Structure formats: structure tokens, C-alpha cells
Image 1 (cartoon, one colour):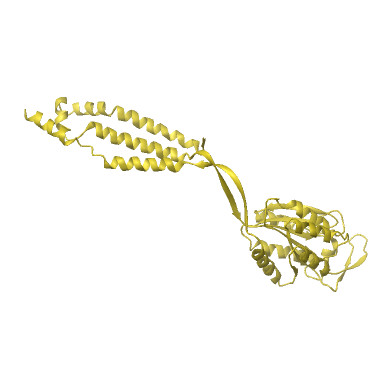
Image 2 (tube, one colour):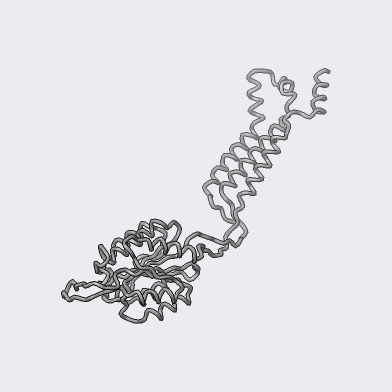
Length: 331
């Protein structure tokens, strides 16, 4: 047996006090009556009332109060299996933070445009858990799955092209890390990959197939221009042309039954991707747990029955006893 609110048990002290006062009630009444009249007149004055039934009604009220107090403590016993359900999905954003994401063919830059898109997404979710992966030459879990959206925003706003120390672009590493970041018992796992698609390691398709085998759907978002633009290495000054590789991102989405979207300044694609996610994914997370049964309602019902019985009891003397009392007064 377990008591969920044990601190309410202290209120039972009032029931004990009321019981002591009840047992001393007759002596108190006798002493008070003696102050104003002779004691032998007491029976005549209270001839229509039964001390037993009055005391019994008060005793029932005290019992009802005790039952209410016990109900407030929420007693629990016996076990039951229960499905714990929470609405929402697990969604992880994998964001490319490689140097190519500093390109300005999409203003203010590819990376900042991606961050703005995710911020817009956060404005529209309510019960989903969100996680953040940043990747370049390797991948790091910047924010595990959480429903604390303010914490997600703090992590998101702190991302830049120096967030991952190893340079390059390894989308396969991001996919592999996402497979580990999702809980194994969840059936609504969604990965949203935002990148310019320039994968330098060529392991991405194999990792995408592994995600599909685990039931993880990947939606990809391409940032940048297929025509490309020139970026300058901040340390060496070397100029490199970078462009949006939509083919890789489309293949990842197709392999995992997801969909590819190109990021636009207007941000309409974030509405589309949100709609697709809720249409295609299960929106319930749950598991079976064994818990103690709540039994407070039994004491609540008992208290109600006691109060009903108390209201039906007549504190007056029964007719036979009353007639005998009147007959003795006449003699």
C-alpha cells in the first residue's frame, strides 16, 4: 500500500479531538444544565431527544470526516497496467554547418536561412519533442530531444560554421547519429535534414537505407542555388565554388519515404513539410507501465454513504420510549 499525500494524515488528529469531545459531551451538558436548573429537571427538558441517537449521528459525521481525509491522502494498492500516451512526435533537425553554408547565394546566408526556417517551425509545434544535430566533417548532438522549445532556440541561435571542429561535409555521419538519438520505443521518428547537399564522403545512401530499416523518415531541405556561388576560405583566402546538390538530397528523401523541399526566401516549404509530417506520421508516443491503483474513491463513496445515513437518522426518542416517559410524568 502506498499513500500519495501522507501529509494529509495529520488532519486525522481533528477526528481524534472530536471523538474525545463526543465522549465527554454528556458530562458537559450535565454541568451546564446544573448552572441554570435542578438536575432532576433535565430529563423533562430533553424528554423528546435521545442522547444515544444524537451522539450516534455525531459519531457518523466524525467517521465521514475521517473517510474524506483518507481520500485526500490518495491511498493506492493493487497493481494495474496502463498505457501512458502523450501526443506529439520526435523530430530531429540535422543542420549542415560546414563552411559552404556561409555562402550568400541565399541571404543573409545559407546557414542563417536554415536557422530561420527551423525557428518558424518551432513557432507552430506544440507537443512534439525537438532535437538538434549539427554536422560538418563529423556530427554532434547539440540538443537531445526535448519539449523545451526555448532551450532549442538557444542552441539553434548559437550555431555557426565553427560549431563543428572537423571541416568538410559528411551527411552520412549526421544520419548515423540521428539513428542513435531517436528512442527505440518511439514509432513517430522524423529527421529533417537541411544542407546544400555537397557530401564529400559518399556514405550517405548506405546510411539512409539504415534509417529506413529503423522506420525513420527523412525530409530533406536544400539551401542555396544550383548555379552555385564563390566562397573564400577565411584563413587561406582560397576561393571555392559551392552549389546546391539537389540530387543527393532527393535520393535521401526517396530512400526513406520522405520528401525533398528547396528552401525559399518566402519560407512556404516549411508549411508544406509540417503538413506532410502530420499527415504521414503517427502522432502518439506511448508505453505500458505497471502502476498502483488509486483507491481514494472508495473512501469518498463511504463518506457520502455515511452522510446520507446521518441525514436519515431521527435524533428524537422513539414513540414507545416517549409515551413511557410521558406516562411516568403523569404519575
